[in-house]
Length: 254
Image (cartoon, rainbow, N blue to C red; front, top):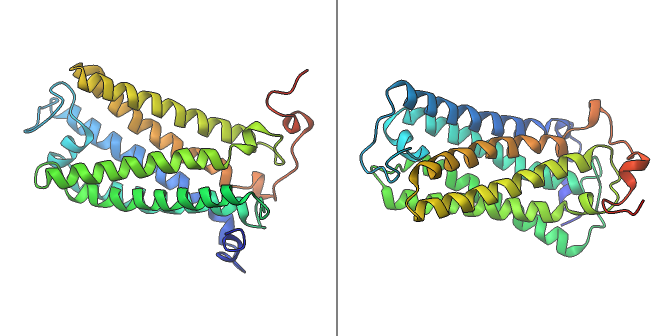
């Protein structure tokens, strides 16, 4: 696979605009969530038929009854741009125009490919998730929801594993470690928040569960935008060597 990635944008200058995908994905998802939330608050916080959480509706509940076209459009833009994001994040690692790690360990390259496939599957499920809502196709919606979050979770975990060498060891590019740390931090926070959400839901504590569900989805928008740091050259220049402090291992002894 190390010899496949670099050929995708061969003889093209579009590689300099790969950072657009995570910006669009994160912004589109944040905007979609905000429109639905503001609309629900503006009409008096109604309780919808079939709403599982009696205190705070899930995003899917609001989308099924309020501004469904907005939800479909938002998921479509987010899904397409997320597909571009997950491709860009793994492409830049092996492209000679970016980081050029063509001699990366084979297991890491395979992991990168699996993360890409999982991310593309999540993007595919997200689109159909918005089309088949909780009212007209509740069972299908649940399966698509599991597919979306399963793909996102697997892609996020494996992407973190692939880029872990830039956190643990001495990085070769200025600023990259900070972005990797920030992205990994968001993955961890989302995982913990998601576990707490499930725990509260099954224990019948619906109000905090509702807040956590919206929290984890909003965090997802920032997680998406954090990939901008992986895919954009600093100040439009080629990646610069790391400074002396950045070259030191994370747990180096003083």
